[in-house]
Image 1 (tube, rainbow, N blue to C red):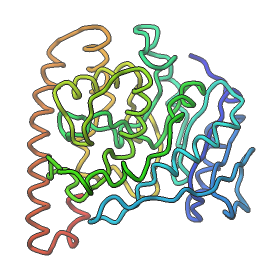
Image 2 (cartoon, one colour; image 1 turned 45 degrees about the vertical axis):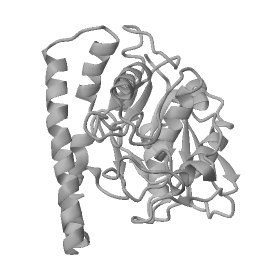
Image 3 (tube, one colour; image 1 turned 90 degrees about the vertical axis):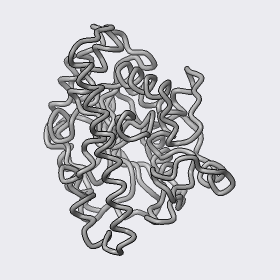
Image 4 (spheres, helix red, strand yellow; image 1 turned 180 degrees about the vertical axis):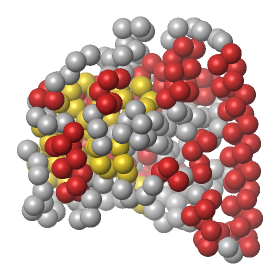
Length: 323
């Protein structure tokens, strides 16, 4: 599908990062010349010396601290508000949802848009949305179903708009486990919300079309695993970070993340596509199942190691090596 840059809008959403946002906008201008750059950020932000075509300011809805151990705010409502505000200014047929701290190194991702749609029709979207494999979880390895990455999205504006046409997450969901028993304390033991942000986005989108039974973020039942794989194959094309989707996350280097084994790669997505869209069960499908099970045990071994290090009081000291 040949898409001209002047038919693309790039929504750069989130807080202004003095260290990265200027370079982020310049990278988009360089790699997608002629596209419309829409900066969607918070009221009273300093946007001087930044290169954009349109800007929209929103009131910051704030984050919610759902994890007592990491003390990292859940920014899902911030993402929804800023993305939705940016989409309201889009006049083009296609749009790229982007963060203010990511660099775009080339436009090769465009080669994958529409590539598979003529072979097998998408399910919940007009054209499969392009996403990055970080942090798109393989639920057979890390039990987080319906967890596609939310770093970047490229697709038809109408599809991206529908994806973010949802209510903000409520305090009741943020504090879900304050009043409920947690049945799986291995995965994010101190996390109190019902879903993690990526799940909240995708599950709420899917509920416009399907009746799902996802009791909590760790509910990786056999049915939810299979549905996750099927919907990944039919709603997205999952592209590898720094390769097919050549972006660079400046906040940290994902390539050094030892948890890469839990991710769904472009190669794995192609296997899912053949299995769920073309009904092909071949040796690659069997290998995918086998290696996913091996990776699952490696993942749990890593969790056990982290717990031991925490008990010994040296977890923080070597966290950069086991992250």
